[in-house]
Length: 285
Image (cartoon, rainbow, N blue to C red):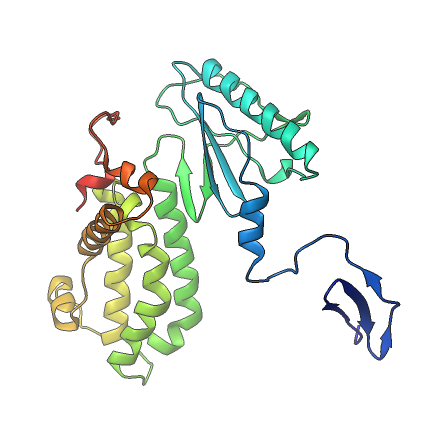
C-alpha cells in the first residue's frame, strides 16, 4: 500500500492523516506519546507502588520485571512466587495494567532434579523453561552461562558473515579500519555483561577467544605459523580474559562510588552463598 497513517498530537487533541485526508480531531484523555523522552520516567512513577513482600525480591528495569523467590524446596519457592503474582495481578487489575502472560516465563535455579510446580497469571499457566533471557543475558537453570556464550557465538558468526566483505582477507580496507569495525560492531556483542558471564568455565570463555582469534587472523591475513598471542600484541588487542577482568574492575569501582545505597549493598558478599566452587563476579577483578 502506498498510503500510510500518521498520528499527529497537539496538546490534548489528535487526528489521523492518510495521504491528504484528515480525520476529525479527538481529545486525548490519557496516555504518553510512544517514544517520548519523558515516557520512561512517567512509567516509573506510575508503577512505583508495585506490591512487594519480604519473602520475595522484585527487580524492575523499565517494563521488564523479575520476581525472585528462595526456598528450601521447589514447592516452597513456587508458593512464595504464586503469592507475589497474586498480589501483583490484583494491583494491575486495579490500575488497568495488562500483564503479558505469553512473554512471561518460570525458571528454577537449582542443581537438583525437581518436579515442576506450575505458576499462574490470571489463571493462565506460565511456561516453564530451562533458560530465560533477562536484560540481554541468557540465564540457564544451573547458572553456568553456557547457553549465554553459545547464543552470543551464534550471533557473532551471523554478524561476521554480513560484514566479512569489509574485514575479510580480500578486503582492501586498512587494518586500522578493520579493527575499528571489530571493536565497534562485534566486540560489544560478547563483551556486554562480561563482568557477570565471565564467571563461566574457562572452556566457555575459550569459545569467544577462538572467535576473536579467527577474526584477527582474517583482518590481518596472518599466515598459519603466526601465533595468536603475538597477533594480539602486534594489534594491541586485549584477550577475552583481560577484557573480562577490566570490565569487572570497572564495575566494582562504579558500585563503590555509586550514589544509590542499594547498588553499594551489592558489594556486601560476607553472607553470600557459594554454589560449588564457581567463581563469583567480585572475584574476577
